Image 1 (cartoon, rainbow, N blue to C red):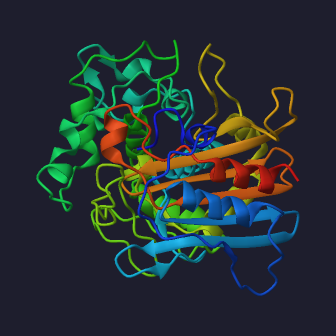
Image 2 (cartoon, one colour):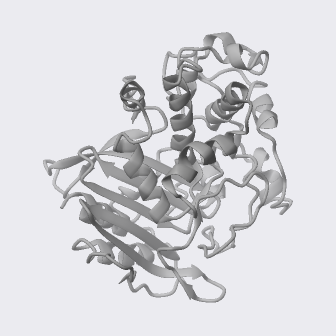
Length: 391
């Protein structure tokens, strides 16, 4: 899951809706061999984001070969453990770019085409109530133009976790897809844009149909192992976050860390760190993971009115470098994720020169399900983005 309007867009608000009762923030650069001083304003922005309402905030920033890591606030409200840049967190929909990368690699190997229908690889899986897998292509799944309904937008879907307090509850990917096709499609395939986690659950099933291996195993073999992303994992049903990690919270400071990732699977179940997510972004947008033709496909965005500039699991956005309406902008590629307890955004400028990974351990799933902002609208997060990317 992610914020319906996009995590980066939520952080771009100009008001700071502070959550009271949090510990005061002090932003500190993380000690690390070879690390550089943080960009001017980054530590202040991260500290302000804690004042805005996030219990803890982590940031990784890169300018050329210079890297900096900053943390502020607390990782655990119960113990007061400070937030540190090496801590793990649930990356939620940032997972989608890993999935699209695997499918693009498979296309580059000639094992599938983005224009293959879902029905070709998953006969009968997307069928009924107006849903037609023969009319939906792999490309439609990856750029969210398939029109498939998303059950994870329903309060009822999360009732086992939120109302019955069964954080270990397991939904299989096929269960979620089956729930989706009980509903009429949101639009005809290819006729518009509609963000849906169902698209990426089906995409994960396509990976398995093509490779005869589990989708998490393919992500590990093709991306995590070659890049040495040792702190990145893909749990299937384990509700715990292992190793040093942030605890995630809702607006009432309820600890949401323990939560079965099963419902999110290839739509958002992965766990990582700011270092690993930044390394993946650098490799992906640096052309290390895909052949040139597939790299072009990755960055080809939809052009429907009112749709974001969404490619295949990644989004193009312009970061405004100031408050004035005529302030200059910096073009960037972005992935983001928001789900119970955690929100994050990863940005890489189009020229590859600068990066930012920004994480907060607050996301109120109940607010999201009601169509309300699930994170504070934070001046600090905006300041951190501008400090890292605008130069």
